[in-house]
Image (cartoon, rainbow, N blue to C red; front, side, top):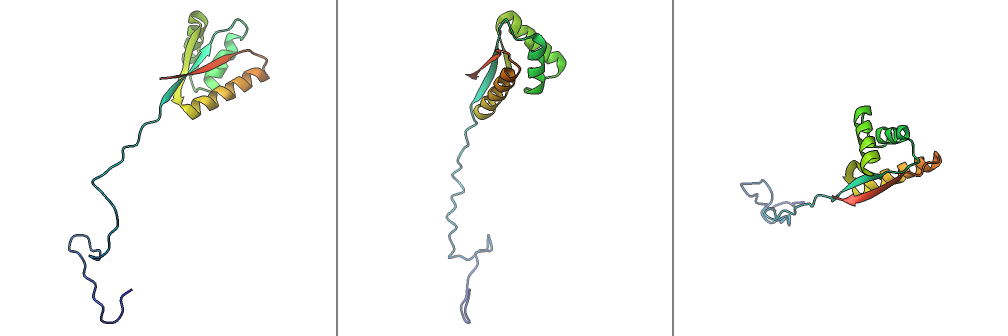
Length: 116
């Protein structure tokens, strides 16, 4: 605050007092690194019903019926299939949710996470 008789000069370019240094270095920018992505992969087993797999793919991974059927058949025929690609935390949470749901319904369904 200025007292009586004090004079504060303003710089012409930014209307801020000349003696105030904000400490900002605008020419240096930190690049944020994109988070790593992980595939959630479903493994085939001989016990989990195909209908249950389709339900999982729709409920937990947001696939429509047609896409869920396609992924389920791929898992059934090839032994493994990708449910989706997410950040680590999201992939881990989805795996835990699905595994819990599968166990509650007495199915041995297995999911894994693979780095992209």
